[in-house]
Image (cartoon, rainbow, N blue to C red; front, side, top):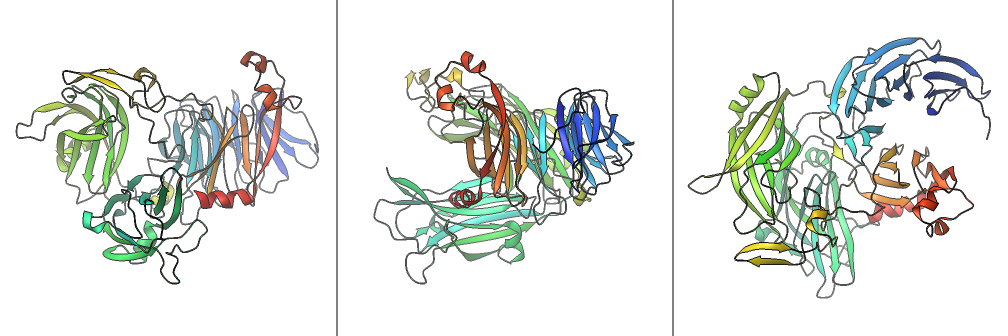
Length: 615
C-alpha cells in the first residue's frame, strides 16, 4: 500500500485516472465527486455532483472533460480544473450505470437499466444515436482498438450474460456468394479416417458443414458444392474454412484453415465468380501438405461479390404466431419462422417447442435497395427427434406496397399475415404477427453504429442441447408418451420454451459484473458473479478460456498494456481455508466463512499463443 486516504462517507463505486496519471477522480454512494492528487494523496476539490448514487465516472482522453452518471438518470460533464458543471445530459429513463469516452474524445457512450445504448456528441451533449442494446440491464462496456475502422467498435455486456460487439454503420455493401468445389492434396491417412469441412462467416453468423469423406481429396463439385451466401455490413468480417480430421473412437483434430475477410477478397480480385485455389494453414502457421515437397493442400472455391445500392433499412420483428398447424400424428415438432428478401438476406427465429401459438419476439434487419422486390415469409416445422425440417406455409409481400404502408405511419406497422400451404389448394396454415419499422440508410457512417450487435458470448452453443427423448410411445400413429432427454436426462417440462436443456451447471456464466478488452482489440474478457472469467477472440467469437478465478464475485478485470497478463479482483474465502476444504462444507457453513477481497495476476503470454492456435 503506497498511501491511504478517506474522503467519502459511503461506498466508493468508481475511480478514473487523468490521462497524465497525476490526478485521480472518485465517485461514491454519498453523491460526491472527489478530485485527488495521486502523489500526495491530497484532496484537490470535491462537489455534490448528483442527487442519487453516482454509478460511473470517466475522464476524456484529451483531458478536457470529466463525465459522471447516476441513479438519478442523468449524465453530467465537468471541467476537470474548476470542477464546474458544463453540461447536463438527459436521455435515459432509468439508472445510468456506466459511461465511456471514445478514443478521440468526440463521442460519449452510456448505458444502464433502461437497456438502451446512447451515443452522445461531445462537448455539445446531443444524442447522436439511441440503440436498444440488450434485453437486460447494460452493466459495462469497452471500446475496441481495431484497425480498419474510423469509428471504434464497442463491446457491451448485460447482467444476464450477454456480450455484444457493435460495429460502425457503413451501410450494406452487397452480398457474397461462396461455393466450395473441392479439396486437393490432403495428408495421407489409413482407411477409416474421415475428413470434413466447416465454413463460417463472422462470429458464427452463417455456417455450413460438409458430410464426412475418406481419402486424400474431396470433390464437392459433383454435388453442387458447399454454398453459402451472406450480406456484407462489415468488409472486415472474417471468413474462414476449417478442415477437420476425425478418427472414430480416437480423436477430432483441426488440420488447417483458410482465413481471410470479405474486403481482402474483393480488393484482391478474388470475388469475381472465377474458380480460385487457396492454401490451408496449420495451427502452427505452416502450409498444410500431403507430405511431399511441393504438394500443398488447397481448396477450390468460387466467390462472387454482388454489389448493392443501399437505400433504406427495414427492421422486421417476428412477434408471435397463432393457429399454427402441426403435422398430423406427430406432436414433437417445433415451429420457426424464416424471413427472406433475397439470396444472402435470410434470417430465422429459434424454434418454439410444441406450440400452436408460439411467441418469438425476434428482431431482423434488412438492407433495402432497387433489387429488393419482395419479402418472403416461410413457416417451418422442425422435428428434433427425427432431425427433419419441413416448410408447411409461406407468405410473400411486395416490397413497394409494404414500404408505402410503413412510411405512411409514424409508428411501426404491426399486422397479422396468413401463411398458406404450398399445394394447389393454398389452405391457411396459421398466421404470423410481424412488425415493420423503416429508416433511411445513414449517410454519416463515421458517427453511427449498426442497430444490431454481433454476439460474443455463447457464439457456439453445443448442438446436443435441444430436447430429444431417448424413448417414445406411439399409438395409432400418434405419439402419446415421451421419455427423458438423451442429453440432460430430464423430461420435457425441464426444458425452456425453445426446447433447450436447462443446465444447472455452476460453470455456466450468469450475471456479468465487469468487462475488459486487450490493447490490440483482439481479446475480450468478462467476470461473473460466480467467480468465472471468460476470454473470447473478438474477430470470430471463439471462446479461448473459461476458468474459476475467484470463489465469488469478480469485481474488475484489466489487461496489462502489453497484453501479457490479466489482473482480476474478486471475493474469495479467507486464506486460512482452501477451496478443497470449503468443498466439504454445506452451503450454510460456507456462508458463515469470512470473505476477503483479493487481486490476482494471470500470466497469458505462453498460454495465449497456444490457445489461439488450438481454437
